[in-house]
Image (tube, rainbow, N blue to C red; front, side, top):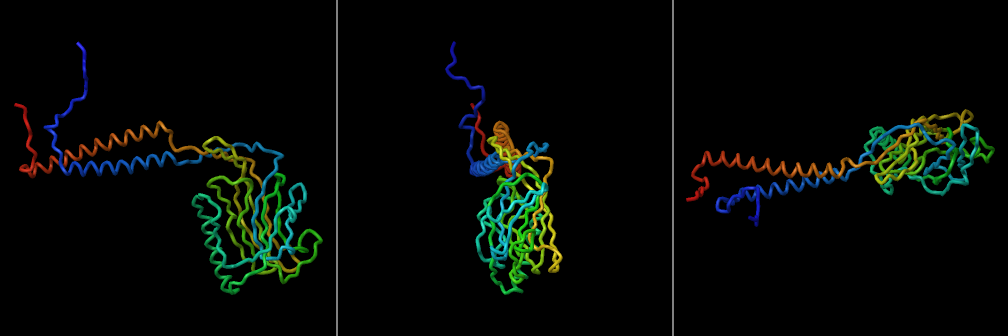
Length: 329
């Protein structure tokens, strides 16, 4: 004896099935909600999260890449850019960085739209930006929205991975016997579009990027104390990027004419630990399939049971509208 067809699941004959408008509407609603939930699960699967680990810094005697893009409200020939590290090695950067004459507009915005970054919320940075916007608006009112002759200093350079001091100063008011800068053109008002160490990676936040400081006197120093944290970024394809991130605290001081050096001072030091950031998916593909199966099956069963219960309650109070049942004779 041979089986031509075998079905282990009982089937309801078509004569005992009654299609109703409420059932069709419920099917459409269930399908729409399921589509939304399935797309939500797939979106969660596509999301990436960062896993953080800490290791001892493996790089010693390593050169450091520094990227700057700063506009100072002074002519280019009146500014000097230098770096001095803890080993007393002096590096003149005036010729290694690009210096372009430009205009410094007090009404210019603080945001840069050419950097495509998905930055997380940083409360400290938002508070700082709000206070600077207020100071900027006040200065614009007082000075009549005036344009200043300015210099844009930008570029990248390599230096030793040592505690160092990068300073931008008025010529003749620093460590060198350069021609003396007239006090009438001295103005350390500046805008920092970028100040970073190493290459950029997704979601990085450099606290000094897109920031302003308004100088109130000709002899004023702005000091930035920076702690650099070496960082290894590993993307989802296991590509490794050696870079850095940092935190910063700020200090400003006004001097008398013969007391101190006006300028911008970026003093940075290094942490002995390295942060390893690993980009990972929020769930595995197998986990996604299990969640989808449970979601679809559970939602259909739950919706079917709810429909039966509500139908039974409805027909209990209105038995005249209950469908007629067919019986085999």
